[in-house]
Length: 129
Image (cartoon, rainbow, N blue to C red):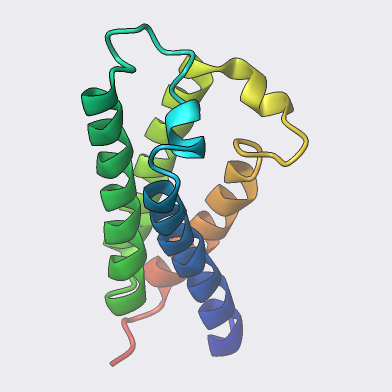
């Protein structure tokens, strides 16, 4: 993979993770909270809902910053794991998100493919200084 292609793929994912973190916090009492409506009432109380949203936003921010500053095998694996867990949780909360026209879950498939390409490149290429 050329350095320009690698940078394009990596920085596009950095943007996705950081933008998701920011939007989650900005929409804390709006769209972020609305996503939890289908959870049982005990899980969607304001305090717990805010905690869950902020925990997810923090995880997204950590992945985004980690990928920006220390790209490599570990962050790509962590991103795949986090995305897989979040996708499974979202599917459990509301499986109809797979049918949403803007693809809040289907977008994870090409993101996973990009992560696998970056992971393969990080595995076969010695780290760049």
